[in-house]
Length: 405
Image 1 (spheres, helix red, strand yellow):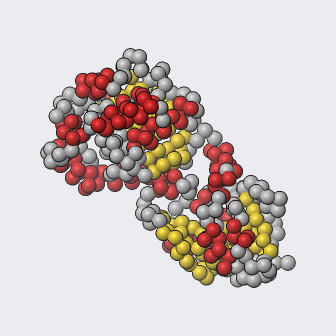
Image 2 (cartoon, helix red, strand yellow):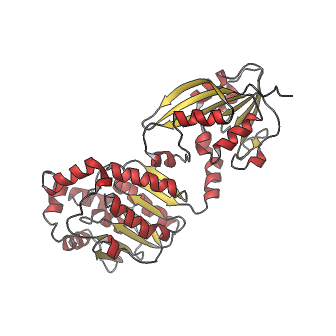
């Protein structure tokens, strides 16, 4: 991070000019600006929901001089939340407008809420920005009246709290985000209605990759979705030894003397823990060593024709676009399947997308999927619990398949 940008973050925090002060939101916003500048993504920067101009100050220092920054806001009291925003959001708003909060940031905002635009301009200038030199302009009014245009938007910072405002922003901006462009949703982790709405939006827009889904939600339009997926698995970081314990447990579920096909073998850790009498065949989307078969499970024409006693599929199912087809194909290959899956413990789809997971089965749905593919569950083991998911290890059999030749 450039020293001037770091100083701008300290400036707005010290002066209580932003509601984005905590949870490293400003640092995350800077990183988004750095990405679009480094990758030379074409387009302007839009901020929808400016408040006192704190995050605009940081963006202004982080962006290149000639890239326009457009700041959209009513520059007055923010509108009230609606029914879709949930009771927590409505209670927060009620307390806010009643001045029942004593935070310096709230007081700064409320003391000037009748006309915030001059305060924002003063704050930008006090932070060393010049509106003309730095290509910054303020656009005052309801988003439905002001948020127009057809220019590409390299970065959109959407910080308008409520579902209806976010919906309008996405209606006006989604089609203007070019490949490589980024949207940062500030309020994803703050309000339930916002989170639910954005989870549904993400599910409907697979062309966007989730980069982060903690307090802020950060998504990026794929420059090339197929290449992005391939790059993920070609990276050595994707197969480093974080799953040794899972591999050891999975190997314990493989009978002695079995021929084993490992789909998505990664670092091939499980091969180290199989009994010596087992015959191990690794496979992955890239050839990780000489004996590794290249199998792309999104393209079933690459699936091995050989028969095996057991198929392993660890840390793979979450990434499948066609899980039912893959499970049915495995059933023609082996009478036994050992697989893992991370089941969500809440409704945060963005958290799953941030991991690259593109399907979302709960226990009931996963058991039903296996049953439809002809698999009978023998063992169902919870092997890891995180904040938002539980990983299970599942051993299945398909008794009507004969022994491999």
